[in-house]
Length: 145
Picture 1 (cartoon, rainbow, N blue to C red):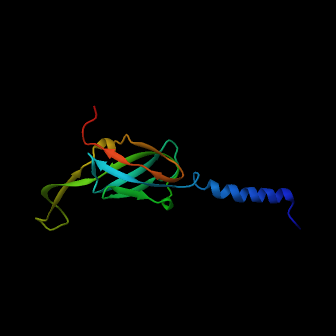
Picture 2: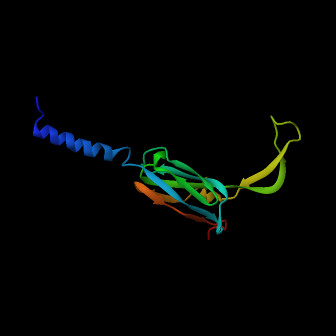
Picture 3: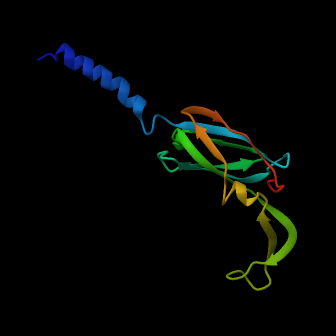
């Protein structure tokens, strides 16, 4: 028995709509640059934490030589995100490693180079659209006025 014209139209409509709907309307790729006081961040991370009803788990990218990228395959959904940026820097001091390392083992001391207003207490917000997104972050270590 041949499907009716009405049934074939519904099948065609569904074949077009279902793939387009996906998980939250597709996925977003994100790339950009991160600087701190005008200098590219040598090494760090950028986290996109979903907020305001944005579905999914968000996305995380490693910063290398001031650049980061998240491919669409990472499944960042279009929506609004809180952005957390972190980067560690060496202080030039050596500190004890502690247990379980052998006594006397020393390591380079590292501290967070990015102010807390850009990471743990981030006020950065970005809206990502489906497809390719470019977001550059020019951070400053100077206190906000």
